[in-house]
Image (cartoon, rainbow, N blue to C red; front, side, top):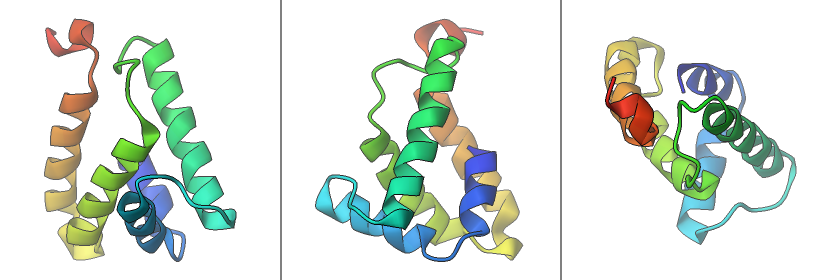
Length: 101
């Protein structure tokens, strides 16, 4: 998630795209939305395949969560808050096997 936040911070319009996707309840269309969808789906699938993340996670839900996190704590001077918030998000995404560790 930290890498996703860094990736999003390097691109213009990602936070706005995440907010728009969250508000619509689905991913939109267009290059930014398509890229966000692909990256989130890839990260979540890799985490589930490795057994680190739950396999029932909807990228739309994670996009909405990340929209809030990045809009609240996406600035360079907010890294400590961003790290704390992303830790909470990742803890909620962990597979039951991983959560017990």
